[in-house]
Image (cartoon, rainbow, N blue to C red; front, side, top):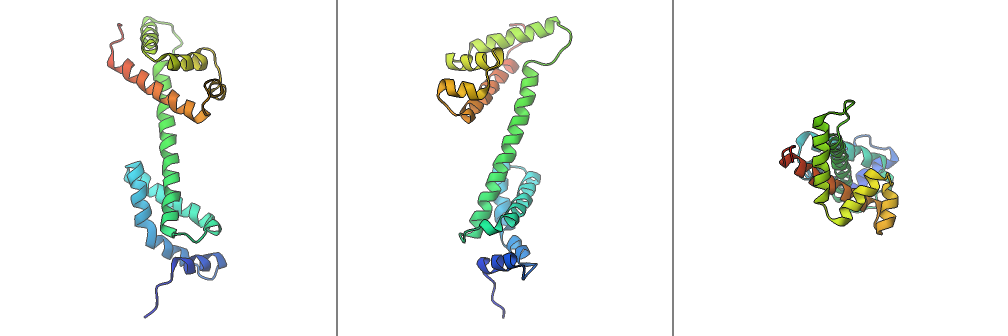
Length: 181
């Protein structure tokens, strides 16, 4: 009866090129664990499968950086990072769509656009002073997010998160109130 090779032995074989199937064995051992972790984050089976596949590809490419810690945990961490990047991309895509919905491009200046802009202005007045200032700097004055971050003493990422939350609140206000404010 052959002994089951350890993760360390399999990784050593992959890195030395002595066993082409060693990484496949590792994948079989950890696919369900990595998939489960991805599914908990992305909450979509197809995206979880994609994250799992991407995680194993990245792990294979970076196998020489593995430091001997628990391979399953290492794989899960890689998958979590990929899943979080995927979620962030989707959130940015939705935010971009929101930006289009708040101020849709329209060649004709018509009454509907005017009502929409009035509703937006009213929604902005419901924000806190600090949030209104950020909106003023970014959208009205064209100040870059990095400069805004420096002005308020936060990181650029914090400002991006705040902007996203502000836009989400504005969207809720605009979709919950009629346009004839």
